[in-house]
Every structure is written in C-alpha cells, then in structure tokens.
Length: 327
Length: 171
Image (cartoon, rainbow over all chains, first blue to last red; front, side):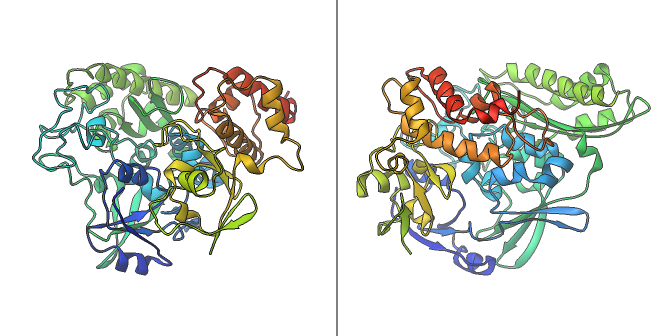
C-alpha cells in the first residue's frame, strides 16, 4: 500500500469537510477498499473512517431508513427488512461470506468496485477504468463473467453487488450529504453506464457521503424473491441474479418489480420486462415474453453468451415461483 | 485508546497501513491466526471482534481501536483446550492445520449468529423465530472458510459435537 493518513469522522459534517478532495476515500468495513489499496488500484492520500456514523435502522412514517454504516448482516437480520422486504434479506445473504457481511457496510456495498480481473491487475493488464484511454483487455480476453447489457466499447465490467439488485427492484432512495448540503438520488440513477468514461462509476461528486438508504412502503414486496445463479452454491459472485416482486389479481399481473445482477455495469432494473408484463396473464408465456423484451438488447462477448439464456430462464423461473405462491 | 487482544491491552501500530492480521502475527507474535490468500477469499485469518467473526486480512488494525479481539490463542483456559478445539482433535477436523484457527474462530462466531437468530441463505423461513442448525445451514454458514485438505466432514462433525444442542432441539 502507498502511505496514507487515517482519521475517524464523528459526524457527517466533519466527514464531508475532511472528504472533499479527490485523494480522500471514505472507509467503511474495508472489505473492498483495503483489498484495492493493497493491489495499488486505489492509492488514496487519506482515509476518513465513517463507520461511527449513521449505524441505525429506523421507521420514519411508512418508510424504512437504513443508515449508511449499518453492517450487511444487521440489515439482513432486521425484523422489518425480513418482514417487509424479504428480497433484500435474501440478496444480502446470497452475497460474500458471513465474515464479510459482518464487516461490510450498506454504503460500502453500494460503492464497491467491479471484480473484473483485468481491473485488479494493475501491473499486467490494460483497463480504461483504472487508466482512461489505456484500452480494455477484457473485451477480447476472458470475459465469461462480464456484461451482456449496458457495456460499451471501452468497458464491459459488471457491478458485483447482490444487495444493490434488490435495492434497484425496491426503488430505494439514496440520501447524500455533500459540500453543498443534503440531497437524494434514486439508487437506479446513482451508478452510471460506462460509455467512454468507465472510470466515472457514479454521479457522486468529490466529498459526497452516502448517509442512508430509504425504502418506501411496498406491500407487494412481501411476495418477493432473490434468485442467484453462480458457479458454486455459496461464496461466489453471480453469473446471473434476479430480484423480483409480483402482485397478481384475477390471474393477471397487477404490479411487478424486476432487477438483474451479474449482467451489467450497474444494478439493472428490468423496466422493459416490467412494462411488458402489466395486465398480462401471470403465466410462463408472459414471463418468457417479458424476458425477451429485456434481453433483446443483450450483446454477448466471446465467453458469456450463455448468460442470455441463463438470464431468460432465471427470470421465468423466479416470476413463475412468485406467481405460484399466489395461485 | 489501545486495542484489546485476548484480554490484554496493546498499543496500536503507528503506521495505519498495518492490517489487523499483520499486527497480530508480526507485531504481537500471535502466529495462530493464518495468512492464506490475504484478499478475503479463504477465511484462514478469521478472528472475533467483540464476539463477531471478521477477516483480519481485510481490516486495518487502527479500525479496531478500543475493540476486543479474540484469536485462537485466547480460547484455551487454564491449560484446557476450548471444547471446540478438543472436538477438532477428536474428529480429525484438520490435516495440515493451516485453516484450523480460522475454522474454529469462525465456528464460534457462527454459533453466536445462530443463537441471535441471524438467518442464512439456507434458512427456509425468514420469519422463523429461531434458526435450526441443520446440515445445510451449518455448511452454508461455514462456507467462508476453505480447507484444501478436504477436512470439511470432520470440521462439520466437530461443530455438531460441540454445539449439537442447537441441532437436537430442532429434531
């Protein structure tokens, strides 16, 4: 690691005052940042530890607010999350290992960086995310884990989070504090697609601190699932994952939420599939058609064409299971 | 403020780059905690912080100022092995032994999570008041600790021997 200074913020205002320059990183559990610093992919001059801030989960009116520094285990185990948003508990529990979930914070999970092996290989590989304009070794390299949706000619890395896929389906709001005060943004708008600047991963400005996630009431989320397909049944990143909630009335889809993981550079809200489903019979034919609508834009790379069929099947299986629960 | 390791206060390193793992091994010479991958993939460096299992390789020591760290060296008392340590010996829950301290610390943290009702991806009903430590639950919850000798069956048996009431209560 390159040398850095360390300080602990006692409140959000202090953190933002300390965190304003581009060479500073906020430190949560460290599960991703410490690793990236050891690889010299990240070389901050200063770390500001923000784990002492916003570590509560609280009901505010009908909504649930989850503090940015709440550990992943605590979110997954929280009574209100388990009851009202089971897909969020399920998504978190499908990710990493228990040790890592005990360390990782909500904000750190959201801002974790891709596990593209070329991104990590600071000494041996070219990566437009690390060094804009340098080229991308993944596009013509080993890209079995990479994106089929939303990639560009400069980057095809996937966002690795499971939790964020559930948050995208839930239309979570991300609350921020920055140099200009407080503001909020939809989780689905927080991450950028790479286009020609894959180094710019979010709309955050230097110094912006995530302070909380807000979950609006969503009764249909009680009937929700997270299905993750991966190379082994535990402790592996997703090849494809599906977060879904479904409400069926008189055999027809009244409302649906659908998001995909493992297939795109950001948590992928499947809006086209959702639109294709409203009012349609809640059956396998409709689910197939919805999956087709979403995946029509999918573009395979050399090694990951299987993800298109895998995503199609995972979407149909997940929605069918939810529809079956209501039959 | 110092850091407390196995009940003893210790001064933190001056350099914030020192990982909790290197602090334990190189500064305090507590070499029980092992460095396997040093990137959060193997679990060999698992220790308990305030009773919760974490990976010391992905931690900076300075992050845990004021907290209580428990390593494998702190488990035996008055010359007697911790019951789980004894069970690992009795059940051949190891071959080369490199992953063993991490397995043992992880299992102790895991049992705390089960007793608090923390669910896992194998928990059938998220709303159940208690977790039954079935075979699938146990293996899922220990999946963050790899053993390349393949001693997993002995490891599972040692944990069941030691904390079996969790399971019997469910049957």
